[in-house]
Image (cartoon, rainbow, N blue to C red):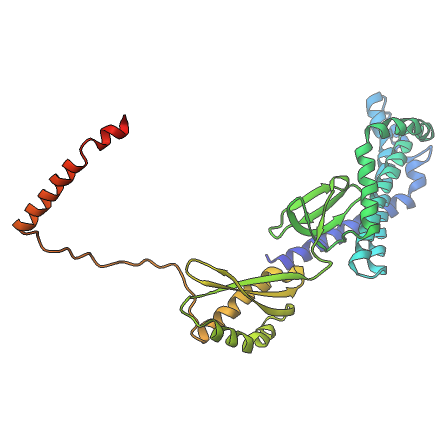
Length: 348
């Protein structure tokens, strides 16, 4: 099954689930009097079947509360999905607006979750008014121990409204390079080229490098042998830079020849640079390597590479004659006598 087919299947399942939930909510609304009234179906069931067991009666009488809880949760869920749909469909698609939409969607998710919890508790007979009054005191106590949470929320708001980075930007945080997928109330999510997701608390982001705001610099280093004529190579490069740019459409400006960047052990290294979008930087570098390799091959420019040189065996002189042996032995003895006592004197 292809990824496109899987996506279509997932979408169909989501649509079916939403339709079933809506149908269930509408049905509960239509039959609300029969389900929630004093003489509801479940109370009548207890009377008709003469159920006297208290545990069984409690479970049967709990069904209306369960239905009401389901109704509340379903309405909040559908409301959240509707809000997200309206926000994404009715506003422009630039990254700044998308970032704000994701932040608002995150806010509404938490808000509707709190509302749903309070309404469900109310459906089960909990005095939510008293709960909210006590929550004011409780919130003060919690806030003293939840300073990091508040710091995350405030930092997230400043990130969005200052425009430090947006959804879709490529940033570097603590050496981690990736694309921003979501800026939430508490955290920022970035995904790297390998699909790994890093989640960072907003208040923990001290320094960030935004590599999307400006064009990035793609670099390419080509090596030529010391035996090559540098002037000849530079003339060939000058005549073909425009053609290389045509072959790499992702290059915004360039490529440019920057000159000799190093005199290596076995090569003269030439540096080329080009401006491009950060999204394209690695592909542009690969394309530049390919184009310059093809250019050098076409024009017979040698690119040095590591080689193993095998030398022929050394040829030794003929065996020494008797006269040579006697002369060498005499020389050795003469040197022994001349240097006698030197080692002893040095050691002492």
